[in-house]
Length: 511
Image (cartoon, rainbow, N blue to C red):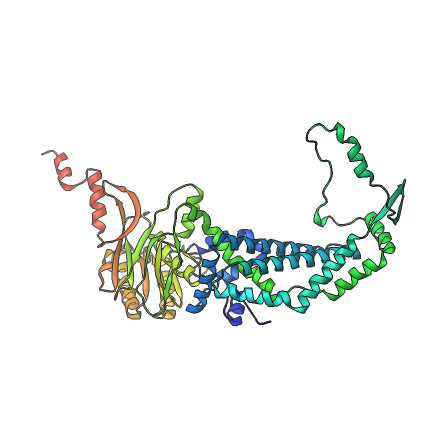
């Protein structure tokens, strides 16, 4: 059997992902919140390392995109979820073995784990065979399961398990209870008193009645009396329990590593698709983005911040979408406009789109063309930290220096309101110096700023502005549009609304 992964095209990439830590940009882009929600109900699979390891190879990203698109088929997804449920149940049975004490009790649950595992494999194999598969990943798994299902080890495992189960089902015995004495003897075709009693009292039944029978939990274990009864039963049927013992000894390591790996890795896809499903039901669009490692012309339509959208949909609120594009020599989106107008959310959105695209996931938006960056840097405002004894301005400078020292022409940079702690003159000077270095590096950059002058530095910069309702400048639209930056326009609109225009003020001054 060859190595096979539904998430990775190489064993080296898989190993690197297992050791991955949360990227530095996660908190700034609110991706930590997104991934926490995606993985919350699937903690047993330890999926977070996979979300911490974006792919750098276009073909590897396409490999995942194919699987994501394939899993839009609800019938196929239902088969895989049924397989996963069976695998989860088999693991729970195996988990009991460490908690149980009595030998035959443990062997019985081991047998149930094997039978459930065989059911899971059969469900997945038959389900994939019935589907028309196009993705390389699922087609490879289909071939693997075809070979594995016909292999001697699996055939013997399933045949032996069914034989032992059938033998155990032949065990019949009688319990004789007399005070504190319990005796066990072989079943001798005695009448089934429970059936006779049910039949006798059936004519007295009036409608539905409460069932007082108690269902024992799977992990309820066995007390010493039950264990002693089982021991007596074993003595009555030694060949059957010897067969069970031999089965457990022979098939101790029965699970196939590739199938177990598939069971875990497929949850990456199912978890993400389950997370975005309510957003799609709410009318929001998701698309498979086109990625390029050569061209920096990027665009997206009807895009949105995934973290914010999830909260707003949960609360029953609408979500504002936005478009953006860069073409030709354009590299820097400079976002200006009034406070609380959605500028930071817009910047986060672009970072999220690019990161999720490198994971091979559908991204928020109707259509998207994105750049395959090598590193994603973010610089958002932080409070002063006593640990480094730096002022906010000094901290801004140190952090942006470190970023520019590491950045390459293939990096993506998200800047949000840097140098807000200093004077406008100093902030303008420092920002222009940094903008010149960003242009020299040919970086893709999204820059949220209060300095309008940065939006007109040259052909590399594009001005985008957070808009307001024309007749009520205090009301935000949360739409970010391409237009020249003019902070005075907002000041004039607000002044006009409150009657503070020069002419109006003159009219109030007594002559």
